[in-house]
Image (spheres, rainbow, N blue to C red):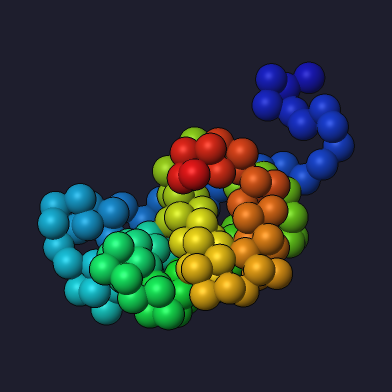
Length: 137
């Protein structure tokens, strides 16, 4: 038996492939809008744009950025073999862009009074990665 075997019988964790360029540009101070324009499939860049918009009070803009990052992340998860459920570990750094976008979408949905979307996204985040839900708040 492998030490990483899932004894509960659920789907295995999904690990997105690493795409370090957008992460490195953001860490180096490149504006998130520039990174999203250069790497439009980067959920991390869209999540950063969502965070920046939310911090300046542009909730609807934050929602739109978060939704874009969320959908780009879903596309990447499906390409990585995800079947619509199962763990998306926060501990695997390439997964963090999607998880951050999902959190940002929940936060913005709550802010505009879209309670069902907030609850759906919050549940999805916890079910994907409790560590992400704990870390992101």
